[in-house]
Figure: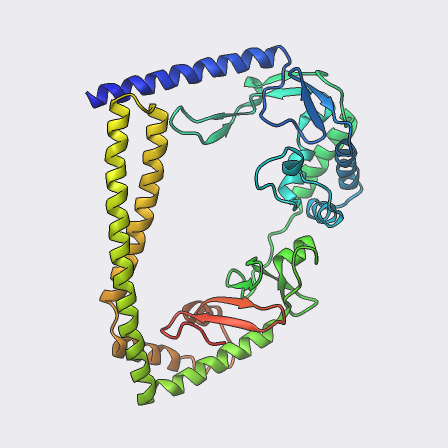
Length: 377
């Protein structure tokens, strides 16, 4: 019986989806804008796009002009953020709209054909009634009505920008990876640090992209990081042989096991609650209290949470099974000793020994090692 209910709800959802799509197609053919938010610089009145009576159309013109003059997308975004220009999300009144302009936002504006006065609808569609991910629609299947509304950008300017986008893409080189790439982060905003050759070191990525309004530089020299880690390795290798250090680590291991067991007990309780909740969803669907879409979304969310909990539980169980302080210390000692004669920090050494490094505002690092000692500061 449940299978029949589920099939009926899915068929009804598909029929509803088809009716909605047909309605949208009809609106598109009649030249009516059907999106949830109009393009930046426009507003919707009676289903038609009209240029806004504010500064946003001028911002669009400025973006096209500066790009044609040779300015990069990230540079344009950084300057708009610095000046405090409202972002498209803020203008649209979206919840939790960010105040930062991004390269992707500038790219979307530069490639939007609505700005030449053409109404282009149906550029993307959902994969299916049960899968809400969107895919691009071939241009021949889109609904395009030329000169449907007033243009902000001339066709000549728009085409020139499209050519520039293609030409510049040919010459964009991949960013160079440096020793601490993907392991070094700003301690305040959490952004990855960017290498700068003129500094012989790293600065906060948010500061590099958006300027001091977003964060401070958190600058640190690469040589300082190398020297700090090499000294820590030598210091720890000397400590491991001391009896006092071993006893300290054994006490810590015992405490860690107790904490992990408490976490596992808590996770088991949460898993039981989620399983009971899933059973209730089935009853609600069978009784017609919730729709198939509601059921699918609720179960999908519960499964996602269950998978995450099971992952956490398995990780904790693995840690407890492998928790042997003496063996860990011997293994660590053996691994450290092979690096003691190295005067240069290699990528292999770094990624085997260090999990993450955070740089504070004053440029001092907090190093999180992969071995038993959680961090050396």
